[in-house]
Length: 277
Image (cartoon, rainbow, N blue to C red; front, side, top):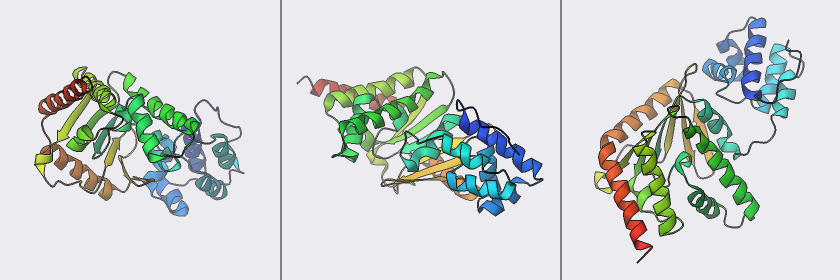
């Protein structure tokens, strides 16, 4: 069995590697271990690859099944509390490992594209009675996620925005002008792809809410869907395929990238003009 504690510099990846070693030592397949854990074999593979977190509950079960004497429970506990809300922890960790992220945003600018002032207004709206320190921590965590885009090419980020995202004034005219100018700068730098679904498109395939799709080099793709204060990371192949088709149909209903850029720049200019009138 694994015999020493993990390097805290990269606990998730190392813990996943140790899981693979322990499983193979027990002569058990990913599907076999998954059956005992009441998860899919692909879920076990994602834990081993580091794209999904080993939760404390699963860690305790793994120790019992593989006879690892509390190793996984101990090292899982050492990972500590995440800076992200509980329902988003796994999605944030998967996001950091993804080669490509495709996201539909119906109401607000996606987190990876938010500027500080915009993010702060969003969190204040979500938690109107929270202490300023809490808002500061949430905002800092969101901006830290955006550092993924510092890499010039990975992950590929392709966002479809509803026109409502552009028109909903969050934080005032100046905040919106800054937020949209940030997006257009990333588009012109060819770092991201953005399309807008205009109001004139009418009904479309994802009126029910947002969706995020993530693909990886050595693990199956995932879909992440959210609701009010909730989120679910999905790995069932049929479900992921359904959400992928939904996203493909969204891009077909949206303006082209060039038309979308023109619209975003026009709305940003309107905000900049209005704040000086």
